Length: 170
Image (tube, rainbow, N blue to C red):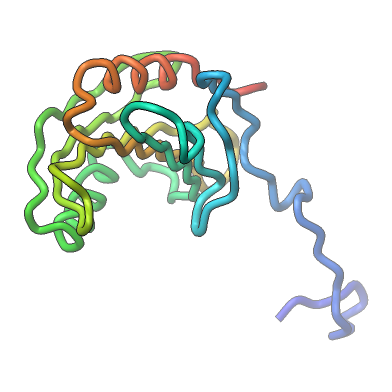
């Protein structure tokens, strides 16, 4: 129970964000100018080319969550892989590594099948912690890139450029 000054049990107004309840860190990424950005369930946003754009489709879902201090990228990778395998039993890891851009990213490239898609889909998840703050939690960001596997190296190069452009403001 929250107690007001003087031992009262009245309701206390809590504001978010507040010094006690910080907002997510401010960040920027660079994307192709023709891309659109919109809201997406359980995510900060989704971005990618307009639905009628020529060529291969792609999208990038950006998520954020708070994790307990001391959580490692390795632990995040293991838990998220177990969850992905539960949802997509045919998923296979094509590549997985830690990459240093401005911050360390755990990057995992997976091939899987999505119903109603012609051919396999490549999913690249990048997990990165936001700036370290003196709080009991850390900010975890997940960038999930999805595109047809046939998009190949061109899509992978774009993914890398976007991740490389990620910058957290102080």
